[in-house]
Length: 261
Image (cartoon, rainbow, N blue to C red):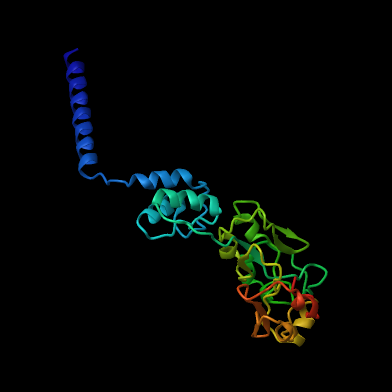
């Protein structure tokens, strides 16, 4: 019995010592957290999507308090969350432009041509190892294998008729699909943008015509007819400056390939 009692006392003493040591260490090495950080964390949506560029909502909250990120840095929360964070930080959040993802390709199963029939793994990132970068004749076209679909935490993107399509009302501009697309077809555009060039091809017109029925051929008709000088053509591909665009719709009317939607 004495052996059991001694063992119990020793174990209790060791446990007490470890507890005291850990308690003192916690006090000595504790890092004081700004209470505003906890308040901001409580306001953020908690998706931890990383769209703000920081490791989760806690990372953004810490960065805002330290002045390393703007109070409207959360793309998911929008103006409502930005306003609350602004109140916590004592600054005016201002209005932010809502952005959404857009897939710059219209080459679906009817309009895009294919060089061969592919029956392998349906993974866009694996297409780099496939002849021609995939079965589509256009090397810039959407492969439709859904890498972007799989990474979207908001179910805002789906493959329809061989091309990824974004639901702009469900999209939170978290940037995950942009990073996932190996062909860099996805970009963030203003939610209010009503005229978008749905193509990424930088091939010359004749080559585009051979590969796709709706690809931009760099004819520059949109640029020549734009009254606000909002369109440029670089590497045979038209691009719209949304800060200059007045949404007149002339570019869409003049586009012979109906690439501007």
